[in-house]
Image (cartoon, rainbow, N blue to C red; front, side, top):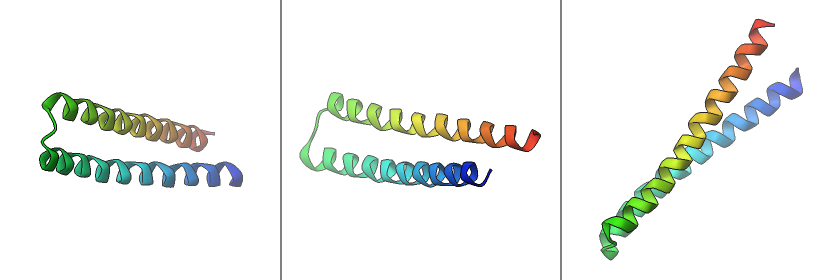
Length: 74
């Protein structure tokens, strides 16, 4: 069980790091788009990519939550 808990903790830290980096990337993309005058299509495509990463983080967090719940139940 300890190895499984260590893996879940490591995965949780990785998800937190990816989420924070993704948020900073979103801010940087918004700033770069304003500075360089990128088109709305370019900005939309980049924002869609960031949204996909956030969706991946949410799905992985939900998967981890379900795994921990199944461990509690037995």
